[in-house]
Length: 233
Image (cartoon, rainbow, N blue to C red; front, side, top):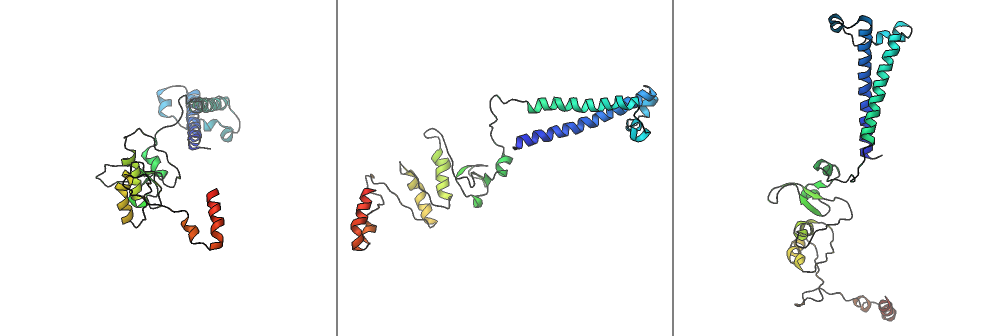
């Protein structure tokens, strides 16, 4: 049972209890005025327990006033609850139920955190860039998708802050090379090893990987078989 259904059921339960209370109040009004008529004195001497004085538990038998008052109380509770159920449970969402989360909902879900508690990408901040505040992150969620047009700020707003703060290993597809230029020094200052693999770089600024190097360090009797295996794969 999701949170929305639970809230609706709790609302219906509260509506039933409230309407039952109002029904008993109406029954007491009826019992009081039925016995003594409507007058200033009756209004001034109105007793909220007038209906109780007509019950079999009090007088020993069911009086006609009790039966009619019971009908009033039950009818009020049932009709009010049925109307509430129609309004609350039968509400149709023609355009879906998706909406933007509130700040309180984001905090309960663990998406707004202090800087020292960030464990995932950074998607935003609760205040301006020059002021201390909390950050919008996805916490422990393993996947994120950021969609925006070209030059909309995906790199500046999400990728670069994440590269500067994320504590784990990162494999970044850096076609323009700007991510390496802007974040590599900061990553190395944190003690990380940074590699740039750009075999088509015109200036030759790239790391390289020699898959045959491991084979050279193997015993001579294994080199031929490992070379064939590498060629097949």
